[in-house]
Image (cartoon, rainbow, N blue to C red; front, side):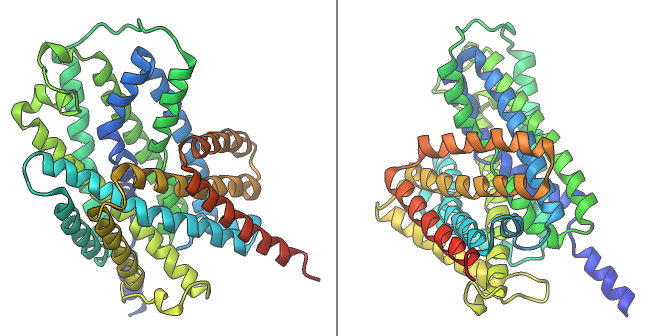
Length: 418
């Protein structure tokens, strides 16, 4: 009986491919659909240099957050390391930033996919978003292995489709592989800052380590596999945008559909819409699934109300998932009322997610005690700080500042108690 239970428990854990499925799609996310052309418009032929820089930054982020996740596994994710490095109150601060960021940002992700669907005549974007959100919430009640397999399938289809379409475009309608645009540091710098949003996602891996078969081996292999796939897809799509002679066959406003057209013809817009659903759904499942586990963990630590920790027999934190889902639906309703738009949601979410990542990086520098992590972590921290200062609204910065001061004061007060 004990052997059967152990075998069953092992079967219900994430393996390399299913964990990779939870990583690849979300990190490609909606960014792969929007960033390549935007960056090319900003940096011209030097856009490829900006992509190479951000791939390097992504490698550093993957290494740091992967190392933290392996050394401090559990539903709390990187907040376990934050607690070890800076104390319980700073852990709560980082958790709050992550929960706030995902509660808002998850809606922005689904709205992006909904707008793609609305553009091909499926229906109204706001009502598509309502339906999409409910469907994703219901999926999160399924076994983690099923979600991992589904995410892996969606990520695989998306990555292969984008890769093949980009290669076909480069093969059939090539432009000379030359860099003729003048080198301008400010343009490349701005392009790198925009591309920094392609780095987010590695910090959520730790929230799933309790669901992994072999934390060190599985997590390490999944991160390596995911990074290779993500880097290759990003670079090939960016190269296709830069070195495909799009004007020879495309007379509409540029979108990634232009790169898809040589392979899919008039179906390219519909293909992009469905890829948007796959990638954005994967992002939602990763982030909301991750913070629901974090929320349950905080409840078990008596930081949040006890009822938030309730789980099913399959270890699914159904109360936390339901609560986050309800918050997401309320945010969609506020969008419908005109209180927010997609751009403002993205800016708010990115600010909170960046702060969580910054605290996690600083914690990694302190607890891992590794020279490579120290040097790369400092560089990455500077990137994150610049992004926060440049892209955050005054109100959001004031909120971040107030929360940081309050929880830092509480932590300091705890440390100096006699």
